[in-house]
Image 1 (spheres, rainbow, N blue to C red):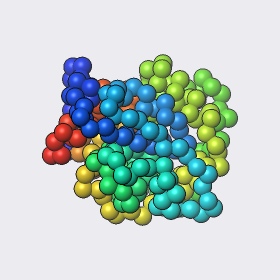
Image 2 (image 1 turned 45 degrees about the horizontal axis):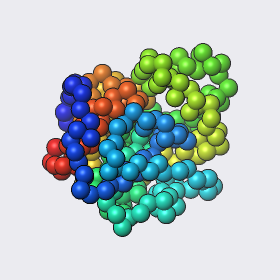
Image 3 (image 1 turned 135 degrees about the vertical axis):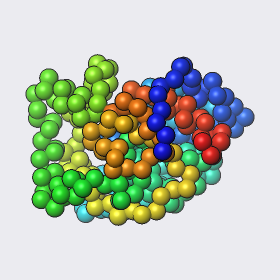
Image 4 (image 1 turned 30 degrees about the vertical axis):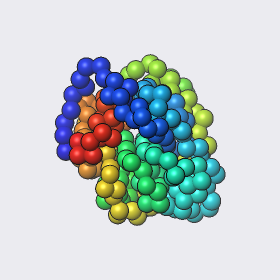
Length: 243
């Protein structure tokens, strides 16, 4: 595990990765979220970004089952890597079991059920998570403060993205996703994993997870607030598997 501080300007483009080999980057957002959370990542022209689209869940479907139904969106015949943010990280890990990505990037998420915080297991047992979908009904200024606190950011643009994401989510899908996440029973961690986490993540505290990289001062929304550093880490890992 490493503790990093955001350095000077640098991006995937400046690393020049893949200029002679096109690569696809599949992105999977947080639960019910949009690809907007990845908008600050600066991929070079030879890396094509392709967001995985949400599909309706089946009743009582597990994350493993749901992820298998996402596979048709991935072209496994060409080089690719996956970035999963928050809830999407678990799906990225599951998809990697059935494909051959160059790299699996987990950002502000978990890679196995051993990293699920104990309080989420209690929430599952006592059913308190049922209240979560009603967050969309909260008065917008209060919601804005709440997501800022939870996701660890005061950046106005980041808050705009988060508030819009919460207000547009499907409550039924959100409820299913929370249940499936808390019931996730994965024990198989990808060998080509780049696991990035913020030291001040309030939703999934760093002390419960086992990341390769911890970003000092980063909250849950580092995919947006620390995108520049994440660009660097991905580029370095793609060029040298032993970062």
